[in-house]
Amino acid sequence: MLNKKNQEKIVAVLEHKNYKTFNDYFIAYPTDTSTVSSLVKLANKFLFNIQIVGSGSTDLSSSKSDNVLYLSTIKLNNIIEIDIDNFFINVQSGLIWSKLFNDLNERSMYFPLLHDKNCGRTIGGILSTLNSFSSAATYFKGIEFVSPTGDIIKYGCKTLKNVSGYDLSQFMIGSFGKFGVITSVLMKLNSSEKYFFTPDKITKTDYSIFTENEYALVSRIKKEIDPNDVLI
Image (cartoon, rainbow, N blue to C red; front, side, top):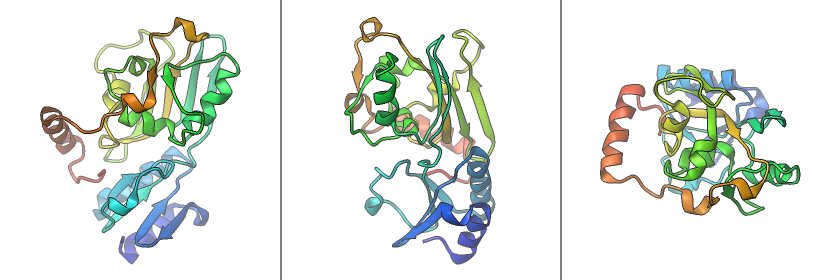
């Protein structure tokens, strides 16, 4: 478990209600991006690790608990904007996928990922484990995330061809939270299921494990952008 001094520093950043201890686990529930940034900066300064646990579907029993802050995004659960005319939606990453899209489907707004109506996974959790070769990956048009050093980074907009250079939305897809803490996502929707590419099932688009070459590349990138190995 995190030592007492680190716990006290974290509690000073959070409101009293936004953390809890569970066995040897210390779990934070930030409610805004600036708090996430403060926690990541704190981890870099005092050299503890952060593991993102989303809505709680992560099995903590098999994970490392020494010197780790578990960061849940479940309170980052607001809809920032629904653009009905242009079929875009901007949401915080902790919103439950099925809750959002069960509601949107009733309004004839669709996204090309088939899900169980009781799916309890978060928007950020699905994006961070999505196979980048899924046709659904191109529907993610923008992202806000906190980098491993605590910087808040925003990328993308509703204009389909907006900037040149690297697409950070696609960079974060399938990253498993290794490259940053996703705090909000901009997605392109469609007005009818029949205009989709063949929709993918969420359960069939997950990465189960990196290939040897992918793991080597991820390790190199991780070393450059997360020198203190904060995000695990």
